[in-house]
Image (cartoon, rainbow over all chains, first blue to last red; front, side, top):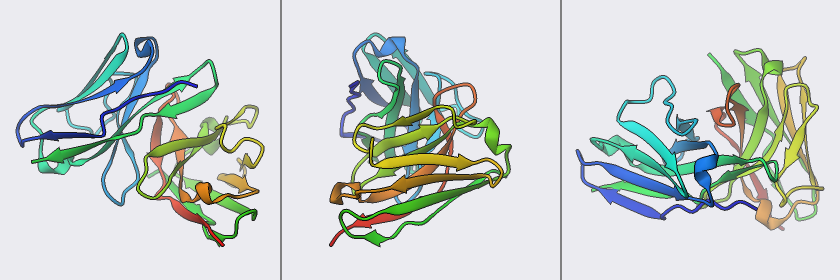
Amino acid sequence: SYVLTQPPSVSVAPGKTASITCGGTNIGSKTVHWYQQRPGQAPVVVIYYDTDRPSGIPERFSGSNSGNTATLTISRVEAGDEADYYCQVWDSSSDHWVFGGGTKLTVL
Amino acid sequence: EVQLVESGGALVKPGGSLRLSCAVSGLTFSNYRMNWVRQAPGKGLAWVSSISGSSNYKYYADSVKGRFTISRDNAKNSLYLQMNSLRAEDTAVYYCARGMPTSFAFDIWGQGTMVTVSS
């Protein structure tokens, strides 16, 4: 089955840029979605279709996807961005949705 | 406003059964694929099952196939997950989530219901 690999943790200072990666075999051929989950809350989609932002999500959130790596980039990081972030794809070969293991973003 | 409200979570013994429900409001329910996602305590998100708007297509994670059954009642705007032969590793918060119409993302989530499998 398809596997998505994320770093367990990423730390960034306020005002800086955070990059969270999601690795998978030829993931660039798939569409990647990203979710933010704050402690005790349900997940929220922050990026879908690799690069699209739902309404209400700040422009500071952006995504890219190429080759074997997709990336969620958060610019001008704020304390409120501290959360777990998950990538997700639809694997057509297995008819399964797949989540990455998640990355805990810490704002220093 | 679109709302998804899960219910039915409980403490159940290994080998037992449970039926989760998700009441949906604020949208034309039959137009959307619906999904169940779970999260074990302190762990990440794990997709469980999905069902198309017309119930023609149902998908299951390997870990639950043959034990769980997803269904929906479009007249009642409700989604269900029948869970049989429960195991300790099924212990998790179970979320229902709406499938985005034009992508495979999940754009609206409920707050979840806790299922604990323990003797």
